[in-house]
Amino acid sequence: MTCELPITLEPGKHASWCDDILAFAGPTRPVAATIPGLIWHPPAAAGDMLVASRRTPCTMVLIDGLMETRMPPLHKEILVLMAEGFRVIGAASMGALRAAELAPLGMLGVGHIFAAYRQGRLFADDEVAVLHAPAELGWRPLTEAMVDIRATLAAAARAGVISLATARWLRKTAIAENFRDRSWQRLLDTPGLAADDRQAMLRWLPSGRVALKQADAVAAIELARALSATPAPRLAPPPETVFLRRLREFTEGNLGPNSAFDPVP
Image 1 (cartoon, rainbow, N blue to C red):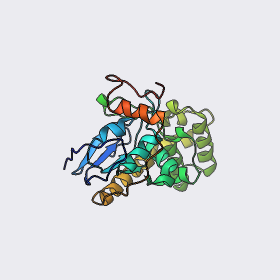
Image 2: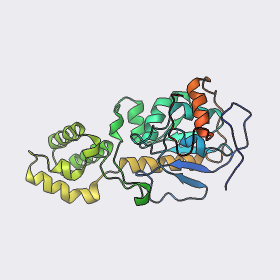
Image 3: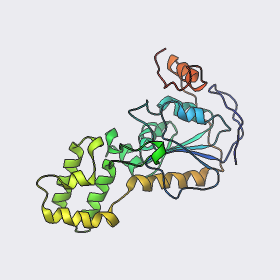
Image 4: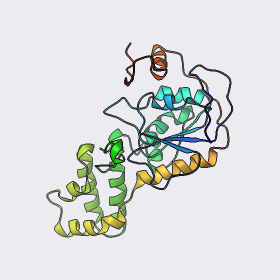
């Protein structure tokens, strides 16, 4: 179903509930996640979630967000959405970061990556960052996320493909790389890696690679489906600030066409 009743950024009465799911994803979008009422949007940048929310409150899922070409999704816009009655779920990538930061304020997180950030076992943003192709090429990931490398090396060690010591050495090597350069080819070409270990990993990777981000994205969509028919609680709005007023101007289209959000007037 599609619900087009507009909402405002101002605190107001709770509107009726829509069981649509608005999901923001690109390189981590689950391949088979096509269900009635699920509306896909590209990876979110600052203001995009608010612009997409011009409808009756519903469930929103943040999976992927932009980081370098535009400002990423803002904590305050998520707080505004939850104050307007939207349920906001985060997982897998940028969504896991924001959910870990905003869980005490009502954002829902799901998955292994969210749990690791929430518990302090992960803390660097670049653990989930990847380079990816543009929309015209389906947002295809061009590098490997560190969280997926970690999970895959752990699985390889458990399966006896490589030793635990080798897995730890490869993990340390990958962490030292810039996220723009992380790939299995580059990692397995690291000087000092035994030829037998390299060949064993190359044979094992096609079936053994762990796609942790994809798995968490699927879990987020499943949670959204389970909750989508139930209205979310309406949470307290964030304080009114110059930053929020500037964000409102941006989302209402008063800063010019195709402009990116800039908090400085």
